[in-house]
Image 1: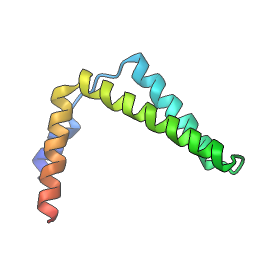
Image 2 (image 1 turned 45 degrees about the vertical axis):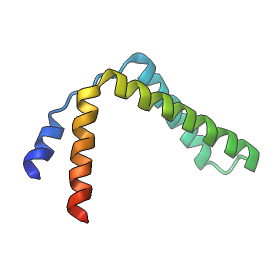
Image 3 (image 1 turned 180 degrees about the horizontal axis):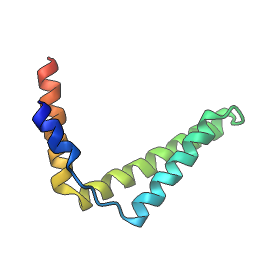
Image 4 (image 1 turned 90 degrees about the vertical axis):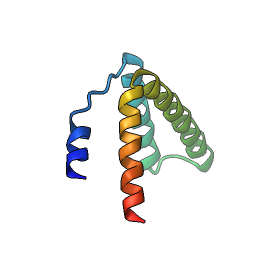
Length: 84
């Protein structure tokens, strides 16, 4: 397992400018969600927008890093199977 973890540390993911901007947008939304200044409707709208951005990020991550994503998924599946 430790050898597999070392393989994960050596992975290099490619992040586009759009992915970086999406991450910053999600972090900004998360900071807003952590504040107490929002009413229920605003909070739900921001959560919905954050989820939309997360879907965009996931899709682009998978498209730009298919090998890396498959390696991480295989590792996580192995780890999950080992915990059962």
